[in-house]
Image 1 (cartoon, helix red, strand yellow):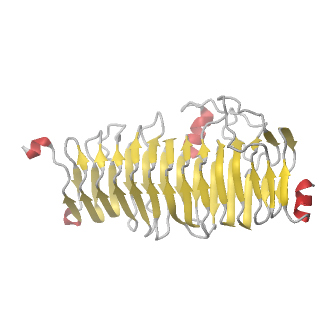
Image 2 (cartoon, rainbow, N blue to C red; image 1 turned 180 degrees about the vertical axis):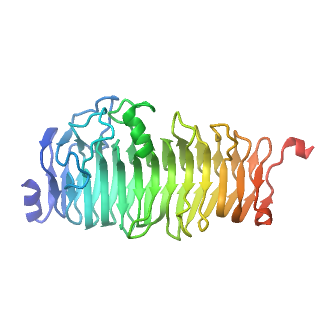
Image 3 (cartoon, rainbow, N blue to C red; image 1 turned 180 degrees about the horizontal axis):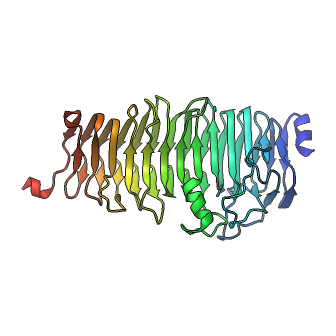
Length: 386
């Protein structure tokens, strides 16, 4: 009633005081209205098994058992926002494997300038689902969604995702725990389908099957700017199934494979990816990774500049840091640490330019593409120099 009255008054703020509030149904935040709790910074957990439940806490019950029901909270008009809240699911149990589905915690559809700020979502199935929501703002959101942290589709006018952190809050994390293993092989932290010039800044995820997934819906795929993004203990820190022609621009990223696993790939550009471009600048790959980059697409172009490849070939199978099976690639000004083969260029590659790369024992390229590969100014081993 308070939300509806604020809307009738032309918009306003509905304040949620400190305390735990049981919500058996669902909430709709009308256009021009903010549902606001007590937090002015993102609430977080100070203990592995129970987050701090001071401040404004909503207990969500509706929709248990179905991911397709009414969302717990819907941003139901333009300029609707939620801020300063914890949402938790009291019926959630770590022993439920696979996790029990719920509808999205927050949903927006056919809106403009909606937002989520300074919130913590404790163990939802899917935290955020924005569809047809232009110029949205998602900032300072924490939580450990099991199925998916965030899904963005058909948001075609400069959406912003800032300072979001999906990590095992309220979970005793172990790589072989059944719940953690399920999320670590099936869950997706951030998924972007059709979104134009998406801006993503200073985000992080831990313990997912895929950290950042670039998919294709019936509306299309993504292009955008991704700065300071990180993924730790993910089987695929980045998976590119499709992207738009202007490309995915990734700067200052840090990517780590799944703990206790030897089949992780830092960035996989799938065979389905079309003629978009994936560009890396000043990134780092380390930890339990089999391959840092695996480029499988015949049409996509991949570039890595000024990037540091620390570890790879965790399974000691002879895997390269960068495997280019098809398409085009530029590998320039990068540094390589452990591992024997730095770049593999397959027979079907259309063009590869490898220039100015350094490795302590000499840069090693396994080239199967003949003259379609150009090797220029890469560091030679001391034996070769002598």
